[in-house]
Image (cartoon, rainbow, N blue to C red; front, side):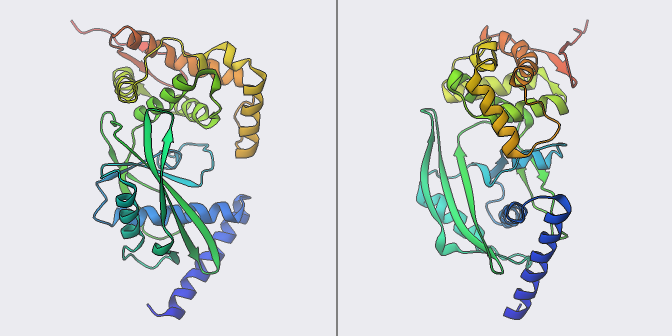
Length: 310
């Protein structure tokens, strides 16, 4: 397509996103960021690396059509590739240059930079940043790639919803069980020092909206804790009243809810932690003792033990 055609598409998309931002009472830059992330994922889904990356993190809440979600500006991926920074940067550059249907987005491959990130002592990854544009609007996309984690039972093909009428990305996605397992691992590791309220929110949301097979969830938690070298405990500090009643934690939770513009969620951290504890401690008890857990969860709970077959 010639330059004037590309400018027309970019201008049209820009106006449609602006209309959407007004209709949904969201900042335009937020809507633009989501569009840019979506179109990057579409390029990934059409590249030769489609089976080497699995989508995870907050964007999976969109795939699962959760009734509420928190805003994010990052793309989180699990990579099955060489974890050297230079290699990951080269792959992201290839994805940005992938030929696709014109959608107005341009990703500047020469702007890509990467660095190693470390979350605690047990988890490493690579952070890549790339500048892009939609006409005169500019964005920076951040892609965080982790390595080594096991997805239980296995990654599943998911359709990432398209904001407009362009083709939607179809790629590998995380399971809800492994999502909870990784966030729980972080809560256990950080204990009273935890300030990652987004992890608390995500676990709460998933437990309120989706059913779970206790056997699958316990296997996901066990695999994750083992990989990250974290000891299983029956009652994590982050799920205790000591954590919930801490004034600093309560303030962090209220600030998170306010900043994220999340409606319909209690700003009482104690209630949220109690709900999560009711969901997870029945699973963690057997795990900490090396035993199986065979319950079934149907929101809002409680767990029901399966009747053994004779």
